[in-house]
Image (cartoon, rainbow, N blue to C red; front, top):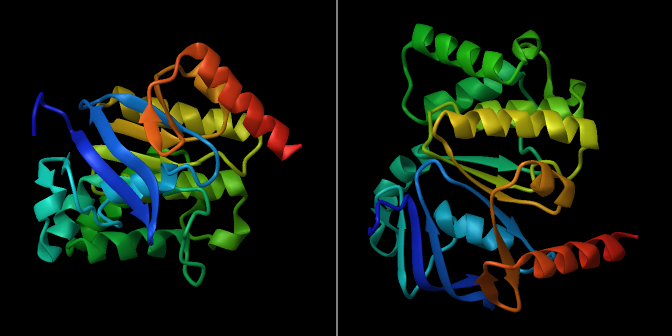
Length: 240
């Protein structure tokens, strides 16, 4: 891996099943950087995130994430890579048959935690960070969308990952709740976490400015302001 990048892709083609969604991808993300991914539905944003988290295989080019070579990644190494990555999903993916606390316990035990005191201390720490200590014993369905997303962020940072991948984390939330969540992401970024976020929310990008990359026409590019505004205007028109 060159230039101390925490994510480095060079000449990578990305497929979703048999369909090419992004070609000849070059991506360089430094430790502690915040990067937005924008683009229409089906443009490759989610697939790119899945490549970085080793959910999708790649077959050409060079790809390094958190020190791991994705082209040579062995199955036994995947869990160790994923401990360095926290993923925040738009659809939450919480286990609906157990409490918030048990959701977090499940993740910690699945990643090798055994000491009950250490588990309890870590859960308390992340829940305080997202402002949800009062909801430890509630079921996911008892929480609002914004509250569930806070739990998802807590889950994502349990193992102190170096990278946070967020796939439309505010997509189903109202503007006020979205702004509150962005403050959590901003705090994580200030603590040194690398943030790669796919989003359609132009207002948030304007408020929390950062490097912005566009997925369009099978390419990942760095758009100028005119391209950025055009892309978002088209997205808004399609939603009407």
